[in-house]
Length: 256
Image (cartoon, rainbow, N blue to C red; front, side, top):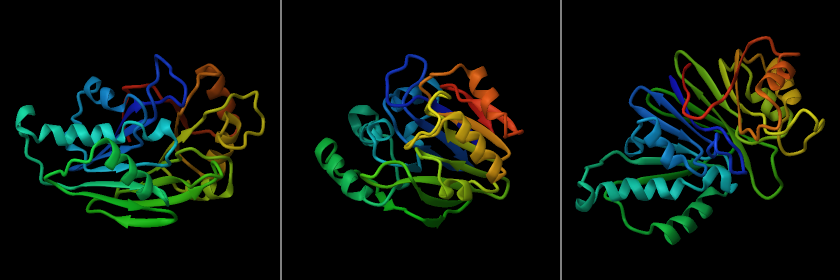
């Protein structure tokens, strides 16, 4: 399993950090986790072809996690047209989001890219759910983020690795339990150390607690505003978590 950090930022523009987006390669599957602003551009920088995406997983529908979804789907479609080379695509694209996602997807797809593709786009919603694919299992868990709609964390399990992506979440029992057994935990560390008890996101203190309580082996911290230095964040997280800590950087490639 290989991870590419396309975007490690959050909801404010940052020249060093694109919007949240992460690319996983599992055998023949190319899986995109979230599609924040700038995701499409980042594919070109890491020399990965978005045309080969097989799965797109959206943790929730805040703009910083969703903005480039339709742009990616439209670009894949345009690549199949004669004017852009007429590349054939037969594999379906599987798009998965939280409860209520289909309504959001259908609105933006109809509004922004209503053309009929010569391949299938399959859209699913997952709450506290499990789906099995050929070489991996996908689990989702509703976490506590905002009151408007649900946000989910995703767990991807292969024979060799358990990978968890937190999405956006507050400190809660659901995320602690869901992260148990994770070999790699890609987790938001949005807020600064100075905010002691955040309600909708995590600070380094809460990341440390979750990692220690869940028994995760390796952390990758993301969704960053850079309100603390990497050294400050690592020091705080290491107070309770004794495993490897990585501060995500855009365009970084990590073998899990």
